[in-house]
Image (cartoon, rainbow, N blue to C red; front, side):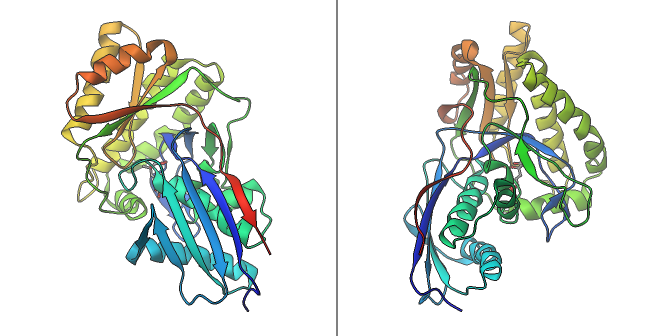
Length: 339
Ligand code: PMV
């Protein structure tokens, strides 16, 4: 079955930074994680994706930042679009154009914003009417963290316990509309290597080989509960040490994976050191670092301390630029013509 005429829609989504990391799937086919995670969707960084369903097209086409993509990038998009084709019983192929205004494939969660925007644009253009929870569950099948980028601000992705995954979903953290004085200084590290292993494969290696993984899973629920309380109280002095403790736990799980996963560069490590030094000399938790599966480092601080933190980052060699981001909106449509 094919569409009689083309339908097109565009969606915009922002990446999120995980304060509690998703790392490991208990069910790969359904994208069900071993642990719940907690994140902040960011502003300023954006992916805009346009999907046009074309009945005459033989294969899906993908361009990222104006360049045609092939190989595994295109294959993962085709696999994702197949799920939509099977729901709509329409075999039309799609032209997907995606643009990012931030560095991609280097651990800045372009897959989160990418699959959130793709899920939104592809379903809207296909005329599917999904709730945000359904859209989030669909985005999850492209990239786990994309389930959280459907929502703005602080978002929790519950692991659930059911084998069918029906109790596994992301949702905004209740009762927290915004924390406007919270700033995420994203330090873009020069010479950050392009990501080699896909996170989805790397994390399953951790599950299979890290002797620390089981202990990490036991630690996470209490950490999420404490962070949720600290976020509700806007209590950075409690939240910031928890963010770093979690980041260190994630890194330890990666480092104890066989073969070991090391995402940081010397500059990234110097940033972690600079934050520890700043907090020690200030006598309070002024800042908190965290990173995902990449070399760039996110440093959280309250607005009043941003100058202080920027000054200590200036002393670190190898930082290309520092972006000041805050909480941002969830994925949303920007244009549509559905026939
Ligand atoms: O969503 P994926 O498959 O790209 O994996 C994300 C993994 C981390 O970014 C390291 C953690 C997270 O929760 O975002």
